[in-house]
Length: 165
Image (cartoon, rainbow, N blue to C red; front, top):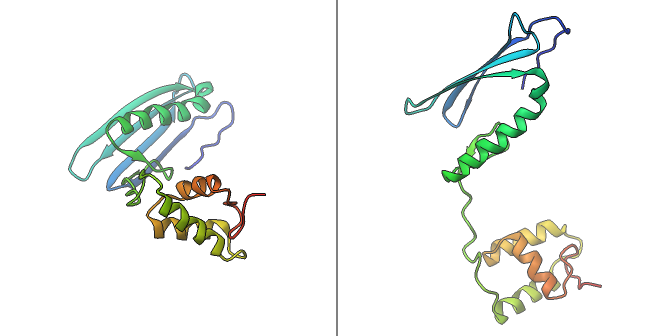
């Protein structure tokens, strides 16, 4: 994000254009002539289907540090209510990641035994995250699910091939 610097009595003015997820955005910021401690933020956007977004905020400089996180929270919540998830990189919408095929399924005794055997057979010199990802992929589970199941089996999820001490 570009930064605008100014002395206490100078005006702020800048514009940023960017494209995210097929939408073109233009953000213009300018301090008011008669109240330089207040900025006007104009947002214009055009989507790939021609849909338009526009809005203007007039903000006191003292509110700026709080406004960004507040707007991110509010707009993120609204986006989620429409089923859109927000990526941290410039707020770009990202598609939902498909869940592993066995996500949410119960752990049978056979699956627990398979996980137990796989973890104890894992290379102890291998990074735990690498081993966890490989087993999760093979078993159609999430890494968190594998980690939790290992702990329930009294195996150390941070040390491949090891039991909890």
